Amino acid sequence: MKIVGYIWRVIVNLFYLAVVVYALDQLRGRTETLIISTLGLIYVTIRTIAWGQFIAMLGTNSALQLRLDTIQARLDGTFDPIMPAEEIAALQKTWQVKWIIDSIFLAIISLLCALTFFTGLGKSI
Image (tube, rainbow, N blue to C red):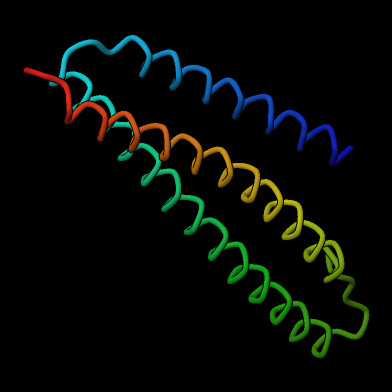
């Protein structure tokens, strides 16, 4: 079932890439080319920062949950954690793969925006 999630992630990112390519292709003037390509770079930066924060918080929260489960298991011998450590590690791995997929497409989008920006610098006003 994970593979379906990964395929969906790729399809969605291909759609985003197609929208960006179409938008960048429709630019004609120097000013709009520079502004729209800069906005594309800002978009990539915001999404990258958000993903970085998510991955960091996922690791922090997972480690904290494991510690809390350990404490509760020591206090109550009959305690059974809701999500075992193996499931938490598998969940982290799944999100890391999704992050890698998104990162590849964000890198492509940023390169397209940067290329459009620098070619826009050469256009006449």
